[in-house]
Length: 285
Image 1 (cartoon, rainbow, N blue to C red):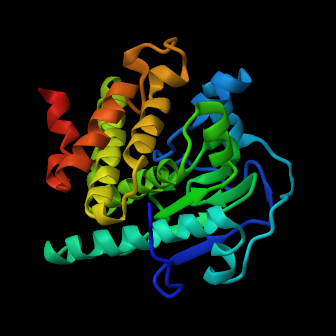
Image 2 (cartoon, rainbow, N blue to C red):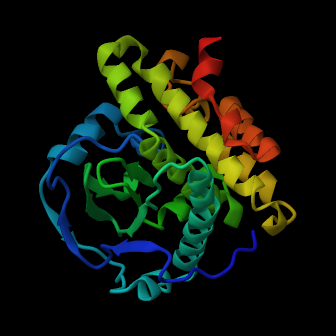
């Protein structure tokens, strides 16, 4: 996908690469926007997801991370090609979504993109590479260790620049849900009805997929041959059924099946209309 270079004055960047963090840190809940949270560790590393989530929040220790970050947006976004690509995607997402909020007379604040390497800290607690990219509602930050993209390509077979941009666009979708109040409504409904919590979470994730498609559709002139296929392949690869080899019951899904994720990404791509991303009504039918 051909994106313009970011304007350092138009993106909010944080960089924790090269900093020292303990694994546990301040505690708190892990952000609901993680694309591949503990499931990816369970499938590829034999780790129990529930046990891992506890470890992420409670374990101590730490160490010096390997990658050195930058002090400014320009420096952070220029660490490597993937960092620049990620910043370019963030800039495009800001330019796409902000006018839509202005048209609706809804206050809009862009999210903060935070790079970290191996371990970091967020308003939702500790950040670890095994969590995958995630969005943290309390601090409205998108957290990413770009090494995840290597894992996504080698372990999941999701290759290409558009596959990577889909990941960021999905997390940005969770930011949209936060600033319109949907995230808070869902968390409230989940606490009142725990038995339906997973179903609501799946609806949240699929809506974020749809929003990712809306962004791409509104930048259709930047899409190159093969991009759509890359995105749909990535969506398929990170379906709950694919990540667990069919060993996870549908009632336990947290992000949706491969077919569902492709369906809602495709809906956003085909319509370019955020109003068509009402996964909650679709789930009630």
